[in-house]
Amino acid sequence: MESLQQRDVNWQDGKVFSLVYQAGEEAYDLIKEAYSMFFSENGLNPTAFPSLRKFETEVVRMALSLLNGDGETVGNMTSGGTESILMAVKTARDWARGKYPEIIFPEMVLPASAHPAFDKAGAYFDVQVMRVPVNELYIPEIETIEKAINKNTILLVGSAPSYPHGMMDPIREIAKLALKNGILCHVDSCVGGFMLPFVRELGYEVPHFDFTVPGVTSISADLHKYGYAAKPASLILYRNKDIRRFQMHATTDWSGGIYASPTMTGSRPGGAIAAAWSVINFLGKEGYVDIADKVMKATKRLMVGVKSIEGLEIIGNPVMSIFAITSQELDIFEIGDEMSERGWHLDRQQYPNSLHISVNFAHTEIVDNFLKDLSLSVGRVKTPNLRTVMNRVLINFIGFITRLLPKKWISKIISLISPLITSNSPSPSSRSAAMYGMMGSLPNEGDLKEIVLDLIESFTEIQE
Ligand SMILES: *Cc1c(COP(=O)(O)O)cnc(C)c1O
Image (cartoon, rainbow, N blue to C red):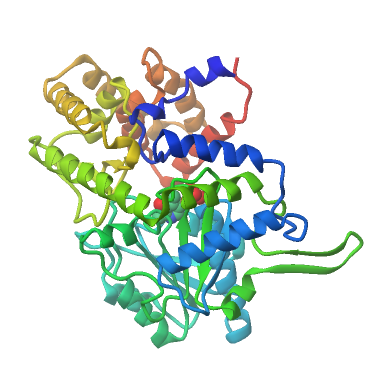
């Protein structure tokens, strides 16, 4: 296992963005100990494990105070942002079934930038997803949201901030619309919930997005992101118990006895609950503010550095430590590939093509190295090289054959060709420019979905 781990991305040296959040060695050791101390315990039954019950209620209370809850606000821990969002959508659906029984096909309205977990929730719970476009600042116009509301709308969603570009949606206006229409409003603060309050404390301008905003009925906030807790841990918080009631489940006529569960999962990870409690108590508000300060300073330096490289731009006006790098004249994915060659792990984004950066404590020491490598990478991409030419040839070839061949062949061919593109490179993501280029040349989106599903299917197959 140790030798296999050697081949994974090395997040310890701050070269990975968005997958791992690290608050330093001391916190790391503590979390590990708390996790292993409670890894066998099960949060499903709080009467058997009053310890976990204490941890969870205290973590929830701490988050509620951070997000300006009051005596009425409540919440639960979940296994990650996706589960929190699934819960918010399920709750809204069941709330609306009681309040608006005439709605047969409920809908929710969300900005184009909102997380795919809402699509998942919509698919799982039969709530139609109505995405509205974002403007040139990558936030939705409030009029567009208003226009998308109809008699079937039960829920409005805003992100604080959005994952792709770190932009703050107009939460106050969205929540006002929800109030006006007598519907619910969820704020997805998965990535910002444990950062924005501290960023505001530091004196940066942060618009209100939490329970101080009238009309906000639920908030998701991930502990395993800027809460620096162990995975999986997130929170789903509600304005009051009456709304949260629709989240919970009870089976009373089962031969196994009365079974009740607050969230989606049955058994719940004691280790993650304990680890979250330990890190919150260890860092305390001061610790989080201190980390946020270092992270924000690193972010500002990174952003200034990126902007100073000719050809690169930052999208919109990011509010905290998340931003996206794009380029008008250069292929940003080729720059991403060059960065991969240098050991950096950056997510590729689209509309427009960009590279995603979420700065956390692990990155406070790498700013100069990152900027140096980025500048080198841009230089490489500016001078024509063999790889660029090869990529273009491949993309044109695929674009040509996909127009001639029957649909079912396409994904077969792509899967045959993709090893050619990914081989001979130290990192599997280092030929992403070619991959994305190929995908862009596919005749329709359905093909792309099939290819992606083929790909995740292949991840479940044993590899030699
Ligand atoms: C990370 C994230 C999610 C999903 O959280 P997971 O923990 O990955 O399930 C949802 N929304 C936003 C804004 C996020 O950043």
